Every structure is written in C-alpha cells, then in structure tokens.
Length: 334
View 1 (cartoon, rainbow, N blue to C red):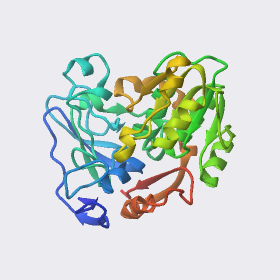
View 2: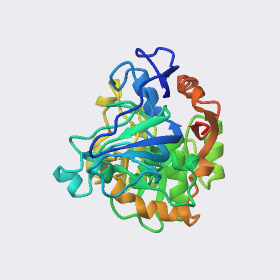
View 3: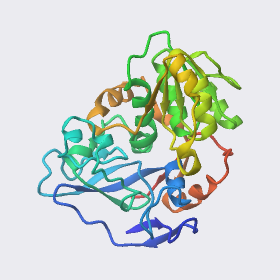
View 4: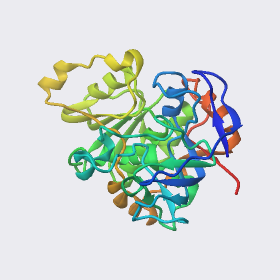
C-alpha cells in the first residue's frame, strides 16, 4: 500500500510503498478515506514523543472496515468507522470500566505502531476501539473526531459539572482549541479565546468566541489546548475561585516539568485536571449532536489535501504561528 514514511527524527517524510497491515484476531483493518494532520504527529516527528523508526504517522482517521479478526463480534467488513487515538486493550479493569483512554496496555496508531497516513491502518481490540459512523457524518469531518474534537468534547464535559452560565477560556486555537470553542458555544456558554495567530483567532471569533489578549480570574473552566509552560500557567491564572483547569495540550520536553502557580491552586481551591482523549464508549452523545447538526466539525476543516501532501503539511507545523487556521485533513482517492 501507499503510505507517508519518515526514516529518522526530523527527516523529510516521503511517499513509499509498504506492506499492508495484518489483521489481529481481535482487531480490524480499516481502509483510510481521510486522516487528520495533528500537532501530536508533529511532536513525534520532531522526536518529542519517541516512536519506532522508520515510522508511518497519523492517528485520527475515518474509513471503511476492510477486514476483521475472528474474535470481533460488533463490526463487519464494509462498516463506516472511526476510532479514538488511544486504543485500549479491552480486558483490563480500566477498559472494562469504560476508561480505555487511560488503559495501561494502550496502543496508539501513529505512535506505538504504523498510523493512518496510509491507505490502510490496523486497529487492535476492535470491539473496544472502533466507533460506527452515522450515515449523516462524512469521512472528512469524521477524521477530526478521533483526536481533536473528541478530546475537546471530553475535556469540556467529562470532568465535572458545567454550569449553564459558565465562562470558558480556551488557550490555543488550533484543532483542539477550535473544537472546544465550537462545543462550548453549542452549549451556550460564554467563550474567551486566546492565540497568537490572527487566522486562528479569526476562526474562533467566527465560531462565536470573544477573542481577548489575556484573561485573569474570569473563567470557570480554562483549557490549555496548546501545551506549554506559558499557556498552562496562563490557563490556571485565568480561573476565578473554584474554577477548573484542564490540561489537554501535550507537555513534552522541558514543559513536562513546568511549574504552576500552586499558591492560587490552594488558596482559590482550583481543580487541575489532565485530559487524554475519549474512549469509544463515550462517543454516542457527541455523534448524536453531530448527526443532528448541533455540532459541525466540518467547519473546523481549514484545508483538504491529498494523502501524498500529508508529509509536507506535517513539516509546515514547524512554524509556531501557522499561516492558516483550522484542521488539515488528507484524503485518498478510491
């Protein structure tokens, strides 16, 4: 099959012919119709998140099941599907409890094994990790669901009550941040958006956010959707007393040990929560909102490119302030 491959950290990704993936007994092979190009892929390519080399990136995808293993009960060839970027093992206590996103035996396409910048991708423990797509949801917007959109949905709604009059501060308006903006606006919350990119803040404003240069002590919920020492601290400082900071952006390298203003955390009784994607079992409420038109992830797609261009899109993320806003989705012709 055709895939995008890089041979070393930071090397130029190339189009290559590689062996098609095997189908595990409990897994499936998905024919990829669309795949997102995510900043997490960039982190791995730049060596911030170690992956086996040579490597095929890509972890947010939508497509059609082309093979299933004999142990799979809930899916069949021809099903339209997506999957979370975290694939749970399916049998540990966390998976059994519906918390596959923190499975200690988790695998991740595009990180632990070859990903979706390819014509086919392997999904392990398919009954735990595959998500059937409603007919009303096309492949291109569905490619944004497995990582950024689902991550934002759970970051906002999955860590405690969300008051009807809550103010939400979103720090970083890339794919996750813009998804959080859209979801919060759909919930009729007041949304404050912060980003250095004029294109990103313009899109956030078009989705209903109020763009601000800074926030201090105003937000009930603050989301760091970028992942840096600066944005994490700014997110905590943006909270009013009793507020909740949700760390979504990956904190890698030196940022993994970044300090927070713990004096405020204690004195103001702030919550500090990590959020790591969303398990497949939690997708139905989100997909129902998408199918009914309450949420439209397609509005977040800034550009659609050919699969062969996905490597160049990855390299373009070297710029800290992208020229274009929104999610880039790579598609393959069939």
